[in-house]
Image (tube, rainbow, N blue to C red; front, side, top):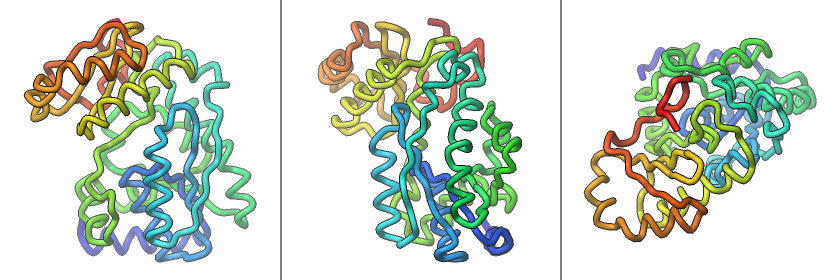
Length: 268
């Protein structure tokens, strides 16, 4: 991140005039919410969606940041589980999820005086399988960070400089991302995954995924944590079984964010 990137970001937000920031609690959208507040003040509103697919911890992070940095913030409930395309999980689940989000944010933006919906999309996101980008394009949603050339490293550097508590927070995609393509998304399954991850998290592991394969859970953690995982094997197994899984496995390849995004990923 250089001075010209930050200037471009601030100029872009100033030109938009009024914005509604889709703020997930991750570092990208959190940074956007803070900078939008600095540039636009009361004309910037951050909104965090809550649903069965969103861990409560992510909402808590957004709430704490809003209180600390003083930006306008609210939650809104989304109902992506009511969309057949989302439930079918056929490889374009994120498209249907984002359509739901933008449909809900649309009236809020209108009530804010015709504000523009903005997201924390960054340059790195365009190199991954992101069906949600198509939904954003269809709805005229703007990505000021990406437009200013921000990568993840750029975001973290500026977030740290501005004092965001979550500047080094690991990525935390929605719980539905733990399901292989073709696995039907249900509230029951999302709850099971969430309970398993919270159980492991209480043992001191902060960056993890519990991939769902019916009665089997496949745990992904950074390779640096594998030795510690084995040392606490019994506690981890107990935590995952308490969430409703009968079988608990550890992925020896370690954590690979987004490795279930595409059809043809690891088989059930």
